[in-house]
Length: 123
Image (cartoon, rainbow, N blue to C red):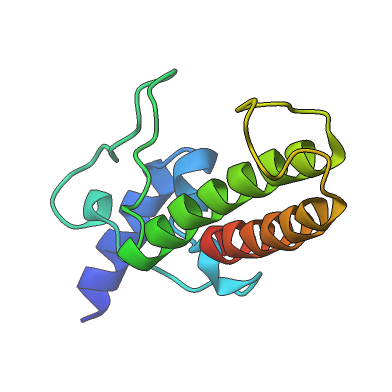
């Protein structure tokens, strides 16, 4: 048992400072929660991302995608309603919402709801 731990310590001594820092989990909120990386089991060289390569993000939760999509749609429609209600946007020309201030209020409520959905989708 002592022989195994001394070999792990010897392997760690050969790692660079960046590689040794990578052994600690960022998700531990400042407490050094040790991970057992692949570089200390079978390989002597740890895997590193290629400089300039894009880091792949974790796939989003389907509910988060839905919240973001509906939120951006609600925000866009709300801003359109605000523009039509205030008379700033006269499109379409025959719309009953043009220069009707109540539609600007409805638009503000819908845009605020869209921002809340976007905020929840980003969490």
